[in-house]
Image 1 (cartoon, rainbow, N blue to C red):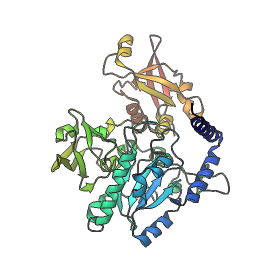
Image 2 (image 1 turned 60 degrees about the vertical axis):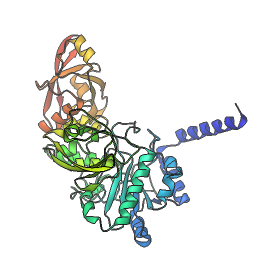
Image 3 (image 1 turned 135 degrees about the horizontal axis):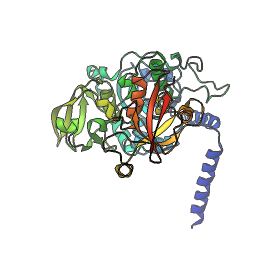
Length: 442
């Protein structure tokens, strides 16, 4: 191996070892020091970003993330900042990096809080041009986002900015309804633990409100008050696949595939279509699509769409029926751990494959949830204390045999039961059926 390659390899290994050796506290502080020193991004100071945008006339890009995602480097900071296509586009924006949600204006910044990377494109007056950042798996992002897709979204935002304010009416739907509380630290579940800013004088990590904690606080608000968790809260920001769309992540919103017999297929969408508007809102990315779907009633409704097919614009109508959100998967979400505490006593479950069903004599189409993990501590040990073991196969819950996914089980627990109730589960273990009761918890 050439000497320069050896030195390069040793340098990379040294850097990785250094990063592994750093504590989370050290990583947060060193990240701040680096970003501030470089001076390209405005660091955790949104008022400054809006002042700069008003002064320069530039649009704003706000990236909500703490540190570069350690689970997936698909959109690591260095990749974004150094990309030869993305960097010149970023220079046309006022660039703001928001590393916590303490004090965040939730009337403006509404997004899928189970993500660790969310982007907003805005005008200085608070008008939202669009969003970027989509996720459908805990660690794998490659099927959802890409550097090329980010570049397309940036170009689209710049185009919308150049037409502003003549297009303002088409952008009004990109802002949501009033939130339950104006900022995260105002939620009952968070107000005694956090303030509206980070504490760099003390433990900055412990002072930070993470994105997923907002979603947790919303669900806790309903559950703690004995109310069912609304379906748009339980199944937030439906992934395009729920209605049959699989998008090309390298584009703004071009359909790679349309699932057969899906709502999208029945509406006339076809592979290769480029979605340009939904409900008259311009679409810059999958995140924009999710925003529109998020605001469709859980009971169903119609979404108007404009697509380009072979260069020709076409108008289509997407119809979704009552219960459509339930097709979404909750299990990948960070927030699912809170739901597991509430509804399953800390169990992690997955649907049993058909060959394994056949071996156990379980009828196809009925409930068969394999317990892959049993929580061991505190509230997450409730199922363990009830007697559930790893490897058990849950075949009924309160006599119901149609809860065929973990998502369905969790939804049943939080919406059909109240704190203090119990779910009677029957499991298959070593050829025997055993019934146990799991408590519904706060």
